[in-house]
Image 1: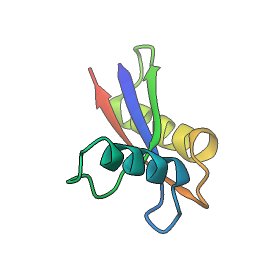
Image 2 (image 1 turned 180 degrees about the horizontal axis):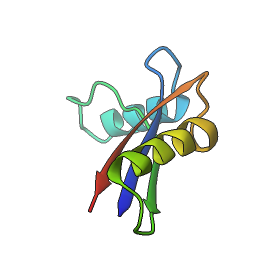
Image 3 (image 1 turned 45 degrees about the vertical axis):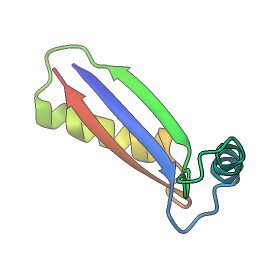
Length: 81
């Protein structure tokens, strides 16, 4: 089973890299781009033998405890397979 985890800054946290990208895109003529938020993307391969519920709980814990800083970031994940 594979898990895909997305980690991004919370909406209330300034994203300077996203702002820079947005500004550059506007400068390149993409005037309809209003905002860019950057983040992190993780693919985690999980060995078989665990239930979907166990894997969901494990990935949630990994994302909360290791991949994201809960003070300034939020995360979401999807399971495939």
